[in-house]
Length: 264
Image (cartoon, rainbow, N blue to C red; front, side, top):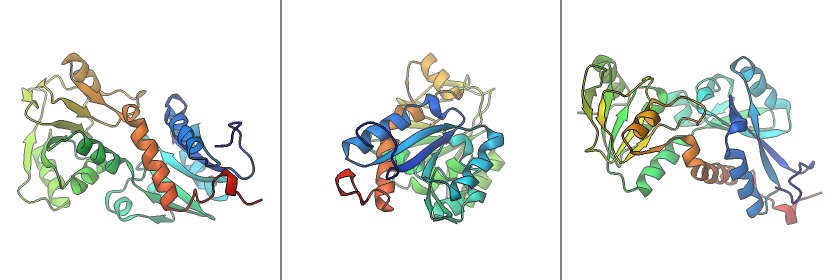
């Protein structure tokens, strides 16, 4: 970011697209990292309604925006707009980061690895994974280093979930309102479900994660607070996401020139 925190014609410009992007500190975290690393780059929050999402992303192809981070509520909606996608995007139908190459949009997935790295640093070994969403599939596919048990309200759907990602002898479990659930034997609970409450959970683990932005209701956050256990959503992992986005842009040669080496 330049010294005056302003955009010049040399500045690499990126967007953070979400319904409530402006209420997240991700842009501030990443811009601080750009500045500390002497990069003439900036990310701006873009509050985009669902009705405007497609138009906004399609028009990036002919804009000066070089890429974007996509908030979780739109991660499955962007896939059909991409011109090129990573193996993870194609396999699971989600995308949370994209870069522009001339008039082509290229998409990838960062959030799953951010979560796995976070759990690794926390020395997590055993995980209870709740849900059967594409994000849950991506986590299950990449989380080979953990012992993962699987939970959902419908066992048949859960069996289909595990077979789709070729999990052998997966430990599947039903979770429903009429039950009493104890997650205290796990190092972490990861929730990618659509549950509206977790009142059936009597005990949680010490680490409870669902990656939801703070403006989105989180049943896990509510239950964690009630049971006095730690909760981590998207906004609790902003530094980790900022680092991941920065490294992704560097890897794809979007931050090759710092301010002192900018070509005029």
